[in-house]
Image (cartoon, rainbow, N blue to C red; front, top):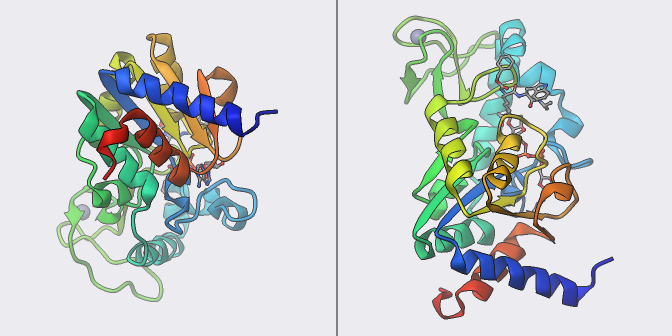
Length: 256
Ligand code: BJW
Ligand code: ZN
């Protein structure tokens, strides 16, 4: 069991490492946006996969079987994003980026909230829900017709269905984004892993790569994850409280 004093000591230890780090890499997941009101995937009652079957919505096979169902589900989630704002966790990561010499934020989130908060050195490993691309020729679409009752809108160039520019199961991650995240994992001195269940690969392998290369790995999560036994410091609590607490403890004079 850990009490408040232990927690304070853990935050202080992580903050000291953060202050001394030359290259900070960060891996985020849906938990970082939970306090903005964006649902996570695997939380038992509130996660999207508690209500929806990912095999029917988040795979290329699902889109081939029922493109309209998949289009509509993502269109609904896209509309929800217009009603949410970045939270204190997103903002604290911007503060960290401004304080350390080298920084990379690799996010699994498709909600665009890190960019909206002001993060600059950012790679989106699983794409971005706001973007739409052709399912055949990959051309990006900035506008599209309303879907019909039976089908998603079509690509202006080749006529194939449009789809969300996100990474589904069984699909490759964007090569440049993944390479940048892997480079950062190999080169950083500190990796923060915040709000991810660490169950989806290859992103879930980044903390182990960082640790194998000698980095200190700090996990921030409301629950234990499969990663917890393998990190140096596990901070248990909401990212919207713990990340600002880390920033305040590392750079007391620089709090905005
Ligand atoms: C808080 C909080 C608060 C809550 N504060 N914390 C076996 C071994 C290795 C790999 C595989 C394998 N079997 C299959 C694979 C491959 C597969 C995979 O990893 N599957 C596993 C599930 C087993 N991976 C892939 O398919 C990837 N591609 C690939 O491997 O390509 C190679 C290949 C090609 C062809 C054939 C075979 C291989 C692609 C993965 C794409 C993932 N896509 C999704 C959907 C994106 C679009 C959409 O939004 O719909 O990405 S799935 C979903 O999971 C989404 C997320 O980015 C991703 C990760 O989830 P995340 O962010 O961790 O969220 P949760 O909900 O899981 O966790 C939230 C956490 O926050 C929890 O821990 C909470 O406790 C915590 N929390 N509130 C702090 N306030
Ligand atoms: Zn096309």
